Image 1 (tube, rainbow, N blue to C red):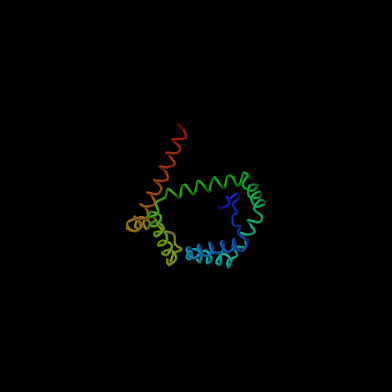
Image 2: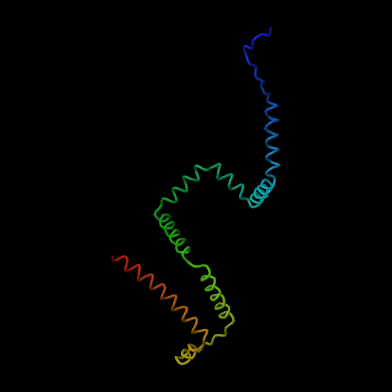
Length: 166
């Protein structure tokens, strides 16, 4: 008759077997993610070429000192005010319509080109010459645009002032 099993002997992996299993897992995952790994290596190389990788390594090596210095700088009243101003500016920029800005900047660029090529007279402009210029459709359009801009600014300021007295 057979003897009863009184103990179970489990196979023990050697260091070489553990390392071989790990290397196989790395090789398999590398084959699956080859495109991402290649792109990541390109990114690392570009950062190295520009010196950014060295800066990041130094930043992480001295992270505690950098954070301490950053907190010291940001805790000054001037830095706090600058951060509040920057946040307000970013919020304001977020409210601006991009298409309107592009249209306005096109007009500014055209105006700057015109000024660069203009032959300005040293003689002062008379009131009659100014009135004659107002009949020019381009001048009229620019004045209307400027007045609409001023109306928008004035309306916003007036509403804020009325709201602060409530």
